[in-house]
Length: 504
Image (cartoon, rainbow, N blue to C red; front, side, top):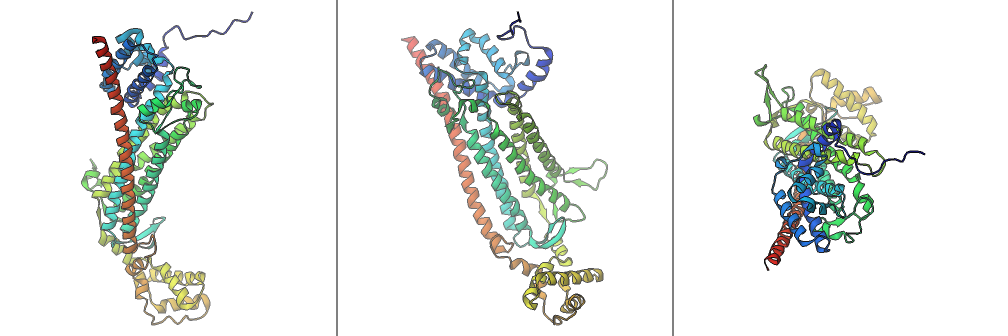
């Protein structure tokens, strides 16, 4: 006869190796879940109580204890890996305080449900805060853009001078990408702000037929429809990490530019002392340390996203992906918050060397594209031909040490004869306006251009968008706080009612 497979819970304690690896790892994440676990437990007890499932004396004991634990900071609660994951430590503590009455917390609810709720409660606060910090960066960048709307500079591609622009126009490019990521984070907040409460293990529970109470009590905006999906979905966490990585990627691009531009070779910008670090060996150095932190953090968050994707490719209804999510996702968002504040401070306080930027513009050849376009209009030639003629002229000018602003019609005619075999009658033509970088900037008054009028239109529209964004996150934060206060008040009211009934 084939021996039957043994069923039922384990009868021995966890192996030391399991405690030191798995349970220790999970308890290290307890600080992210602690507040949410307390709120989830309170909501669950109130839900059971309103259905008459929990005896009144047990209700009171549970709620009194849970309200007490709610006031205990996570680092002061006796989380102990030897008991298992954080939920098990809580169970051990509750049993030590009120005995088997603590067992009512398991009625109709697996431990994973409490943890899933706790994670969402923590993440939604982080997301609201991160959106607000992203908006704060955008406001600072918009203010600096307005300040430098006439600070001309050679914009670059591939670190090569491209076209005349302004530092204000350059900065705004990072505002738009930040705003897009902030709006994506709000979309992900909508996913986070849905309740998995009442889902049971995979198929609900006969004890709780209405899942809306827990959602309302915890201030969730809705209920996750499918109970199995509610317990095991992780796609939204992937999106959260991806957008966090995108946000920091944008800041990393800015940081890399500023690091190059703060070098003595460029000297376009200079970081405030508070965002630099001295060399202990070389007394002349003031290293842009904050920018290295921004760039490195971007790589860390990209790594967290890649790592979580690797863990998440398991079969369905597996704990491994979410075991790691409890720590990885909050840590990634916490890093994003700190880095967003850091880059905001860098941009707010940095000095912009307008004269150095203008000098580089005067000595370069960023007007070449405009000159070629002018030849298309003035000479009726195709752009490719004009491009070649200007390119030949620029090469000859650079060899002779002649800056772009001093290119003459005679020089262009010579290049035209070399390429086309004929003169374009450009000798003596006044090219000063075509070659003047500031006049080129002023010509870019179309939507999104670098002209001051266009930049001011953008900054005005951006401020309106940021006002709307701030209002939205403010409303969400207020709603979350209101729900938490109402839940605590409801728990205290049940205790008071029970005390009054006991006294009567």
